[in-house]
Length: 286
Image (cartoon, rainbow, N blue to C red):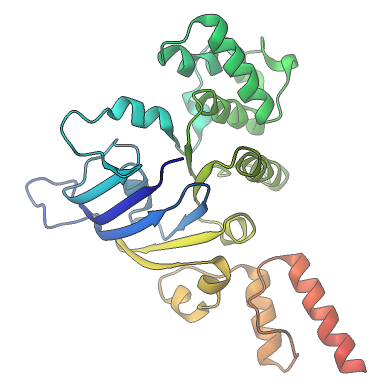
């Protein structure tokens, strides 16, 4: 499975003022099978950056390699790149258009040149991966719940069997139950398929519990690159750029400051917090 390498990538929307960069001097490598979170305030350049990863935007300066090959070389097959690097925008259910769920998910494989029989095999497989069965195949996608619509939209990308899946705020607008359910689907997909996943999110809680690595954007630049534990340990620096660590992380940091002898590790989840606090209280009572 190919890796993605960005080298001193710059992009300006205004070609008359190419020095006004939306993203500036971005360099990083995403290895195959990684689950990477991309966070930053609105306007930090996240959405612009991810549109470079499958060639929808072309860098003003710099290079981007996929599988060791520059996507900017002459005659590079961008169409094939977009099949291999699947990009799912915010509210992907707005892109549903066919009369049935099955027909909608078949659209991508048919566009790859598969016949209808092969496309349906791919579509049914993809729908199964996101937890939808034959009971929805002939339904209109517009008759489904919000969470189900989003699963259908993701299945439409998975049916093309991408090697990299990029999700731009995939849980936006869902209620808490739907959000939890949907993120579990994404985590399960990554584990089962060993797929490279890049998750763009405003929710620190979501990335804290899902991803292995965090890229933090600020004003078009890459500010931090590390594990969630490493990034969320930098509470003051995150606050300075208008991002806030998960609430449970902040709570345990306050408890430490007030004298509770918690372990030094940055707490990321409620389960970790419960365990850490219980252990500290038990030691205090010994």
